[in-house]
Image 1 (cartoon, rainbow, N blue to C red):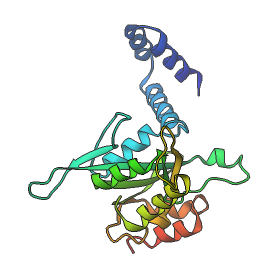
Image 2 (tube, rainbow, N blue to C red):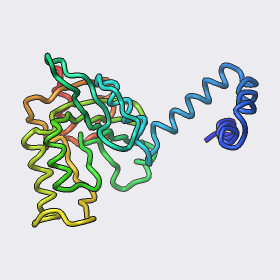
Image 3 (cartoon, rainbow, N blue to C red):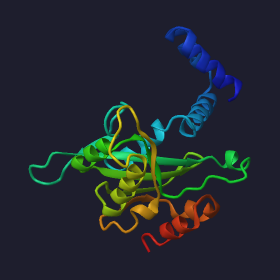
Image 4 (cartoon, rainbow, N blue to C red):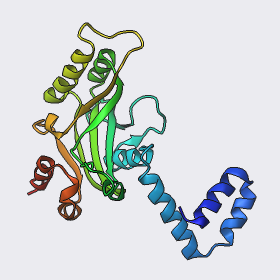
Length: 224
């Protein structure tokens, strides 16, 4: 983080709005653009928060984003006559290429995601809601793809049930959870209602090494 941005952030957190305004008014247009770009870069690549990546995924897919931690990530009105709202759950992944250079086994985009603290009861609720899944991938904060499919896709649900059964063979236990119920594109690739919402093929082709081979091949065949 550069010193100018650090000063602005500390002023925001410790001083009055008037003092922050005065600090920003002293900046040139180019300085303000640079500050804004730096802040966005930090925010969108934050390893501890996926809020902005979640917002991008949901809004780009035509849903209204829920900015609370409770409930699903977004909703939209059904186009069917008399239809209600359709909920969505977003699972964005981001690859930080600078971080990957330091790792023996770099992370790769696999079209996957995970549900934290999952239970049989939570699965039943999600099945009844009939929501849609939005799976997205970013590289250094740049959106590469968004895929949408119904949560109730058979192969997708089968994978979650398998993990839950292994963790809780006799049903849920009080105050216990499956910490991470994970999936990859392999668990929804054959879903007949799978849709490609967004795909930046030129960036995909330049970043082959940041994808698992099978998922890269899968995306490469999209829209051909």
